[in-house]
Image (cartoon, rainbow, N blue to C red; front, top):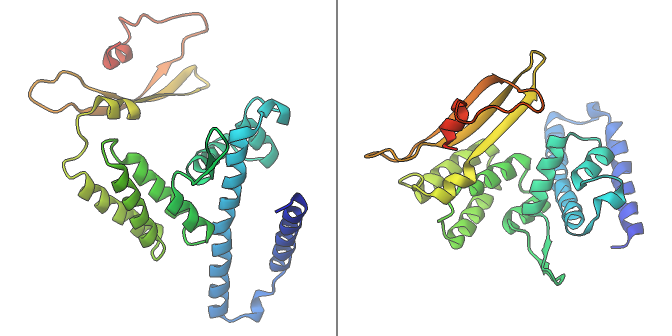
Amino acid sequence: MSSDRVTAAVAGIRAAVADLVTLDCDRFTHLELVELLGELETVTWQLPAVGHRMIARLQREACPTELGAKSLGSVLTQRLRISGKEVRRRLHEAEDLGPRATVTGQPLDPKLAPTADAQAHGVLGPEHVSVIRGFLDKLPTWVDPEVRELSEKTLVHIGSGVGPEELGNTAKKLMTAIDQDGPKPDDVERARKRFFRLGKQQADGTGQHGQETHDRHRPGRPQTRRRRTRQEAVLPAGQAASRRDDPFHRAVGS
């Protein structure tokens, strides 16, 4: 499709929406209004698929500095006037649901092809997609690719006929069926999930951080993980705390 046709298609969408905005809802029965809402929702669910294709290509090819920013995220934040959090969400979704290409330019299906296809047809909404992506992200690394693919297809099929809450319950049951004994003691898996997040400095000079670490060398019992959030003073620039005296560094074993 040429650039002119795309521009014309977008103009057509905007014109149609302009007509809908001025719609006299009093002319319709209650049942008709519910049906119209369903049609609008389907269209709304389809539109992100278009954005995924665009962002995926920008991720592969675009030079952010030529577009006036240091990163693609900054480009989108400025042009679309959305938050950094929303930009990161769209970038991550485009990585999973947008088309890919080999180093030689040969086209590849999206990482989550069944989910991407269902979204493009308006079968799944953003909440359904979030459930499926969250489920696949939590699957242990030892799960076979065939099982991952079959699980995704199963959730897509079920999600096409139920709401996101019902899909979430199904995803929990499926996770239990796949991983009946719970997470295996796997250093690679724990390292993938380990994090340290530093919050913004508060007005009183303190800052909040959250972390997930794992206890080591506990004889006679499985290794466990713990989450901790605490409030502590943020050191002035140039001043370093002694790791030996810092309980956080002792906790993570550094």
